[in-house]
Length: 124
Image 1 (cartoon, one colour):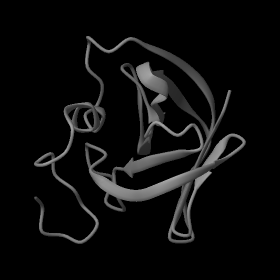
Image 2 (tube, one colour):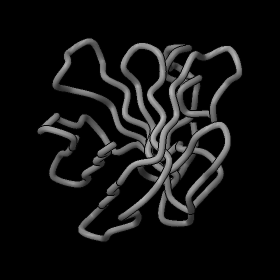
Image 3 (cartoon, helix red, strand yellow):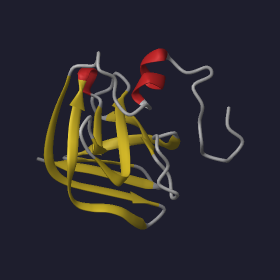
Image 4 (cartoon, helix red, strand yellow):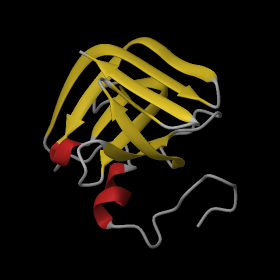
């Protein structure tokens, strides 16, 4: 586990979630497209506008990153079996190379997934 608050490691996580935190694996079927994205964390907008949107197997998706491109900031949304709830991760305020910062449980509202702290949206 990492020592900074909010950051997670792969120890104790399911393999599927841990794999989803990487920057995409060749064995994961996906559909990448360009669309409009929004990432807001703690009231600050980190990504707004055109970006890559990649829909991964199992309903997981990314905003701001795909196998071929990456925005400075990006996020992963991983539904946890409930179509209206998901776990969210992003690459943090320092724009790190992987999405290891936990955004918590997000609830779906249209094209956006959010909670009190964060909002991740993707429009194609």
